[in-house]
Image 1 (spheres, rainbow, N blue to C red):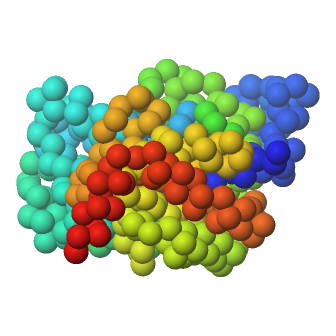
Image 2: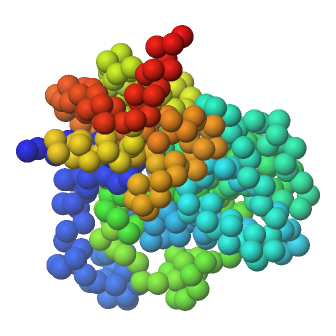
Image 3: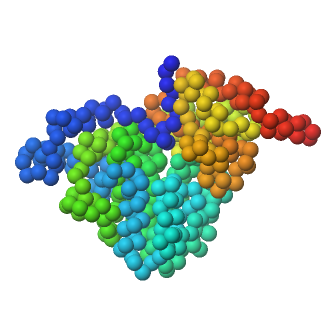
Length: 393
């Protein structure tokens, strides 16, 4: 049975062109890019080309690109650099719906004596900009807000938030791992100081990331070692993956329109048809300001884990808004922050599409999911109670 992969916010297929670009650098062209000899020098030239390709996707200049191992490392490097370079400041502003790469780091820093303000969100997953502005103080070292939420796809007003921070002399970082490659980003017109990218979210392999650091921003390296990355990140470069990421960024720029037309249309068809065919269902998050590939839908009175298991029988891959992977029965921190009702939050499913999905795949999910929900609700005591309550109105 063919796999229908609708979990692209978790990770993506390595694009065939990307795989082809990186393979020679595992075996035939294995030289160290820092070597003086020409065998290594040819690899160094490919690294420079990859840096230019990444920079071009986000409107940066190549010298502002630092290659890392992943988005989490990029996030850690950005926030820790801001704190080290401004030791007199002890305050961080972030949101309640950040990825654990930021959320867990901020909890750790709280234990180290830093003060962290977590901005709440409304029922649509949006932050209150007036509240954000009031949270900025002379003691604030850095603001870190995600560009787009990984569970709902909701896009934060990053440029406006970055401008507010800049006007107060505060550094601004954004975890943009879900946004880069899906929506246009132009650092040449931005007030953002630092931005995180993860390769495997845009059809490059796992184990490669980028931290963009605006020229002129004070930076203290997270990994201290050799001279690599102009002394900003020690360690021999992961050359095959860096070359792969460069190619993936080139393809992402070419496919940006496709992402916002074909992929968005497939997402909308899936979403609208499921809402029409399945009662007591709803979309979580702002449906206007969100990524073109993401929808998070709640199906009341069923468990997300049960839905995923039954979808898996048809080789359909999606993910649950609840913390199924950790074994927790609690809904995700994102949906809880949004105030999604308990009976809805437990039955939330995130579908995240890519340019490789087809209309036939979407039609197959639309055909199978209503009967899955009906089956699960037939076994749910909560659905039967809820049904009785509804029937009394």
